[in-house]
Amino acid sequence: MLVQHPIIATLLEQGVISSLDSALARNFLEAGESLDAGLLAAWVSHQVSRQQTCVILQEIGQPFAPLFSFSQMPDRICEQSHWIGLPAQTRPLVLDNGRLYLRRYWQYEQSLSNAIRIRAGQVTGWSAEQIKPLLDELFAPSVELDWQKIAVASAALNKFSIITGGPGTGKTTTVTRLLALLSRLAGTVNRPLNIALAAPTGKAAARLSESIAGALEKLPADFRAGLHAKTTTIHRLLGSIPGRTGFNHHSDNPLNIDLLVVDEASMVDLPLMSKLFEALPAEAQVILLGDQQQLASVEVGSVLADLCAFSEGETRFNADFAAQISAICAVELPAFGTLSRIQNNLVVLQKSHRFDAAGGVGRLARQVLAQDLPASLACFEDFPQQLSWDSNPTTEQLVSQCCTSLQGYFDALAQDDICRAFRVLSANQLLCATRRGRFGTEALNQAIEQRLMQQGLIGRTDGFYPGRALMVTQNDHSVGVYNGDIGIVWPDATDQGLLKVWFMDAGNQLRGILPGRIPAVESLYAMTVHKSQGSEFDHVLMVLPGADEQTLFKGLNREMLYTGVTRAKQRFSLFAAKAPLGMCLEQQCARTSGLSDRLAADSETGN
Image (cartoon, rainbow, N blue to C red; front, side, top):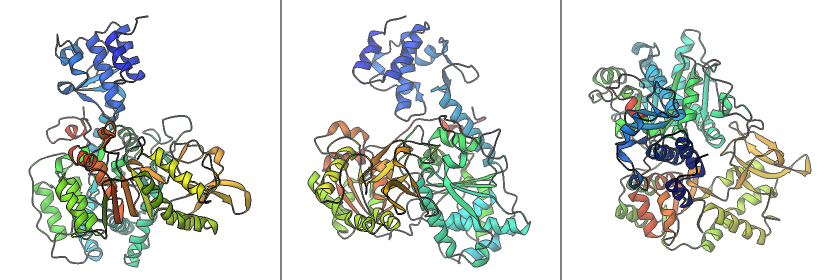
């Protein structure tokens, strides 16, 4: 057995690479590969652990670049390797158009891009003459471009659609009207639609169900009559298999649905999105909803951002499709040249109905996206009723505010009203940029629990104590709980001696599970911004690492701050020194992939 190469060993000792990266490099060397090939393998593995789908060979970054001998260029190293190959070769690493992938992630990307390319070229078969009168019933005349109406018209024609936009732009309202229109059309041919609504987490699924129910109430009765759809998580929809990464539904056992809506698509990672599309029937219609500006998925990939990359924040139909939609909606749409194979499948909603265009939260979100620090800071001065900024926060201050806001939650539990406790819990939320550090979720949750115990609201701070608000952190398909699900520990009303963890499903029904069956959890009093995606709160308190915790700054970026700001429906309070705040606005969350290029207009194949 070959002893670990000193360079690989040093990278491992310094924490630059993980033991998994090191093991892959070592396997390469033991197979007779060159040191440079082994380093490339470690680099790819390292980048995948940072949620990158692949690496671009001509963009080798620190700390790897100085380690390569460069006796040959990276592409030449790959050509001479027996473990790195072209797509048609079955090798551990795949070199494709200057990008180097672990084979598994190349397969996910290639499979997803091919599935989208096929669907993007398919039409529903409904004509403009069938669609237009129903659109006019659903939408009142408008002197401005009604992007919601345009999105419904576009999605009524296309088998694949993306509807994106910031918070409050009406994505759920739009898709509800779309579903109502499609159900009416299906009814004209006596063909009821089998509709599935899915979201990445239980919380997001519940919110989607609630939002659609609310939007349906505003529709004419004859549009509501034939519309029936159940909301669930993507994992539940696909049928998770305990102990395995696969699902019950796949290409050989597709889902029995006619139409799929996926909400919070920015949260869906590349492997899961690939498996979801693989499980779709060939004729199924697909609509993705989400905000491309939000944080990308926790795992590998940035699928929604990649799909929307060509648009640069606006709808860009080609000339023929722009003319078709203009005629249906009685508007004049601009036309664009050939940009992408999916340019006629994407509509960007522009107008926020949640935030006043001149209001504080909405304006702050726009300035964050613009990466304008002075203008962002000015928002806090201009809107003191909606926004607040503390540049010198303390743990005591954060703990006190959180415990005060939790009083109503514990009051509801004291009356055995778990449903109300869930509602109160979603009114205020402390969001952290990181897990570690004095302002991370680990330290703050511990401090909050200590204070709650001192106040007599909880009896202990460890385990499944009565009153604990928690979040599941690990999928357990056998129990039916998934990462991101929110629960409350409280006695069963029929047996006060029996503690259960209560979850609220998408239909606002409570489900109690014995604590011993829950795989892994963490307290919810403070949660990471990543975990908050798919949720919204009346008042968001967001804290960044301290000015002296610079080792934590690398995880700060514009998308994180934007996501935190836009979780707030009414008020946003920021606790951050100027240095970490500035770092948020300087850095962007950029993930490397080939998905956007695979869907480019001049791309010949999905490979």
